Length: 387
Image (spheres, rainbow, N blue to C red):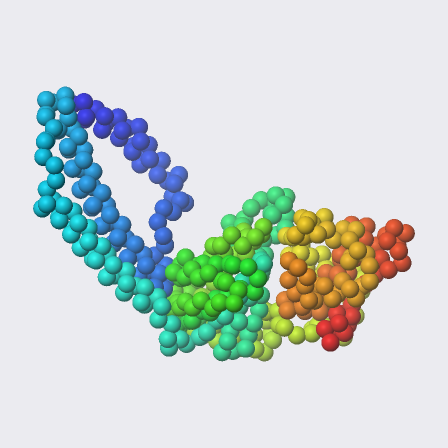
């Protein structure tokens, strides 16, 4: 009766409240997703198989333990055994775990072999990690673009309510067709990142100088989200992954739109797209603020004060108040921890960002910094520096 009372108290205090208020925990996920690819489903079923084997072993072992502790305790007058060692038991508890491990290893090995088979791919995608964004290159189609977090700055600064996909939305998702075998080549341009999309069953480290392969065949159209799973720097949380899986017809339409330049889904590695457009100073400043907030503010802060020594301040710096050509050169080619933005932004964007930096936070104070402070940078200025 004593043990029955203990069980009832445990049930009433722990189990029953969880069952009653289970709706409150509906959003919590304690298991990995089944996913939408054959590999992710294989991983899930392998995980559940191993899990239930472990459950059976755990129940068996703890049942014997608790039975022994309760039924052979000293208060019952049980005398301890005096024997030492039993060769049959020694053999059994060596052989049985070995056989269990073999049973577990066979399906695990088969899944690992399928995961590594990237042959006969219909599409090849190169994924390159940057601090802190992803670059996607369709090797068979000649399409290349950067995918950057698009969460509004006001949400990042806690000035606006967080939306459903806070820190999980990008300006340009990776668009893929369903029912096609897609081969991913994952690498990095700077530090170690990790490209992880749980619904695809893919997690590959992106290491500079190395290329890691993975593949997926997406069975259902939809939006699938992931993150960088490697602590890659101060803004590690600001490089989400969004995969937009489409039917083959929709994918082909998107592909043709990209090739024809009808949609601005990518940032091409080319000179300014609007060299002939006349930008006013106000237009450059306004556009530059958007570029700065989306690409520069994470390191140099929205107020330009930076995070020295790794990310120096732009406010009052010799670069932002000195010769314009020197600043264009650094933005185009990078320096120290700063990446080369010439490979990521077009000339319009670079010109606008520099114009914004040179005319913000008091950097255009000619009395303090001299006649060279401030100024307007045009896309033609940037294009000339590229040459």
